[in-house]
Image (cartoon, rainbow, N blue to C red; front, top):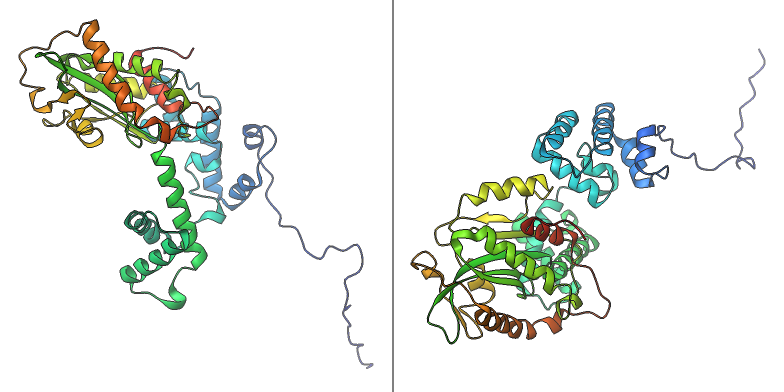
Length: 378
């Protein structure tokens, strides 16, 4: 039998043959294409490709519901949407808010993150440590913070050498934390509403101040003198004053944050308003905002921390909030004096947070103000 000739393989690929075979992605469903107006971003396609059959089924189910959901509908409509999507009402509001903020399959919650952003085992530990590292030396450089983060990680885990995250990974966490701190300090990122008894100059009467305060800058965005037994009305008028103030200088010149991260409110003596407010916020798609403080010693809790015992010639007396027999109804002169002290307080702060190019206040802040004043967008 003749020997079988030895097979020879070409040393060079023939011309016209691709040197790399493109990765094959499953075809995209019509619902997904429609959700992104026929231009599905590569990251979304990659996320779809990495999903299991069950995840794709859940994704299409939620996607169909959210594309047909009227965000301005009633709570009943939201409950029906949540049921159709197979989630709780609270989870539905979270999904809806995430989708509105940035269209992505990740917002639907059926696939945690894009494959490229999956967390490694050390990421959770670094995330826990980085805030304290940056806080401990706020003026240090990125490199110094990254080195300090590595040292903190070693102390916490006992790991070192090749078991450590890379320096680039440490820098990434540091840079993200520094950006978060800058954004958090920008006006409108965190806002609190507080009320407590106060004393005005040239008056022996006791008044109740309602303040809308920006937490990062300590600027008073709006205020009113009212009665803590009707904080619903007091905050409605303070919110209305806020709408007026942020529309004109100097507050319209603030370098506003992109989003309202969180907000809190001190409920007055009318504690039954808490449940009503929670329902109103939920109906408006603002679940999670205006987290209520209802403790007995809550009055002035934000004012004491952000402003102090005095604002110019206005003296805050939180301890008198529940003891006063009655509150003086503020007249025009009282409001003028009070607003003059607010303006003087703000004058020392606004310059550091003002920018040349006008920015709109966060949409979330405007939505909260509209909810409190029961108004609609202009």
